[in-house]
Amino acid sequence: MVIKVIYLDYSATTPVEEQVLESYIKVCKNFIGNPNSLHRLGIEANELIGDATNQIASLLKVKPSEIIYTSGSSESNNTAIKGIALKYQNRGKHIITTELEHSSVIAPLKYLTNLGFEVDFVKLNEKGEIDLEHLKSLLRDDTILVTIASVSSELGIIQPIEEIGKLLKSYPKCFFHVDMTQSIGKIDISFENVDLISFSAHKFYGMKGIGCLIKKEGISFEPLIHGGKSTTIYRSGTPALPLIVSLAKALRLALTNLKEKEEGIKQLNSYLREELKQINGIHINSSDNSIPHILNFSVPGIKPETLQHALEEKNIFISTQTACSKGGSASAAVMAVTHNDNYAASSLRVSISHKTTKQELSFFIDVLKEILERLAFTNERSEKNR
Image (cartoon, rainbow, N blue to C red; front, side, top):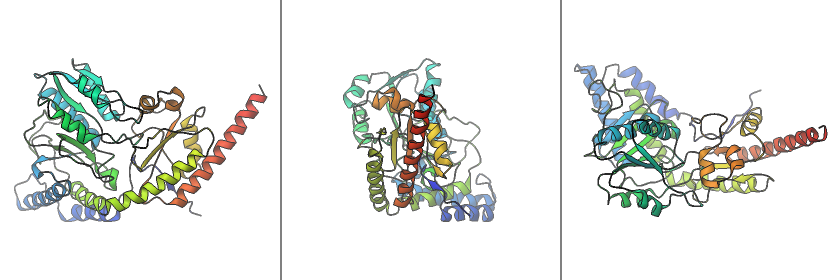
């Protein structure tokens, strides 16, 4: 008997859409030339990259020349942060970020502090949104970069990217990088006042191993990977033609009926949130300003890994923190928003999509209740036997 998998970890990665996989396979079979080669097969492959790039640019309302292909968001974030810092360090060595950022942002920033850069963290309000006044107070003449995710990967909190971008327009020496990994393909968001944007295809039903860094015209930076011109001078290597074409297909499909998909997910999130509130001992960490795709909660006193593995036994899959986080550690993001050690040490993330059903969430709730009741009974019996 096949046991149905209930997948509630869409923010970690998504299953590949069949049409996307078909595009990938078709290009693998029919376009064998290196896009950098000057013979006919290379020229044909290069033309196909041009078509895919134009489609992505049109969908995102950016220029084709602003698109840099990477292996994913981690490379895009590292490239943007290190690239800008090393290129413009003569202007200053001050960078601003938040405590909600993904490890692929925090790690390169930590690396840069070893090179003499200074990193400040902007305060958050009770909803987890950045304090614009505090950001303004942190900005200095030697601030060269502000890097803030549009949506927190753990709590789903949406940041006021447009307002931040407008504020930074008064600081022409400072660049604005936004990790949009958890927003592109999920919610509508403006790129107008952003200088650099990171995202990855596998977050919206694309293939793993392909992402983008969008760099607005007039901006330069030091490449992370050197070795000659590829699709751009900012990222060397043989262009991954099948992945690039599949990215364009995945993005087009993700943006089709985007509002309709979002409304459906909002209804599922509302149902899930209300059901979790009814369970004694659970605290909801995601705010009212979180995207509906992510719902973070804590069960103080119970290790999140214990709950995760107990759910896994029933073929239900959720996350503790994010897939890229160091296992067993308390969540810095949850701590930054809740200021509660117990919540930070016991956080779990459910992430849903338009493919999720209410029946799946109902089953998840029922199983979660059973597990919590069993753990409570086990703990009570253990206390009596002491």
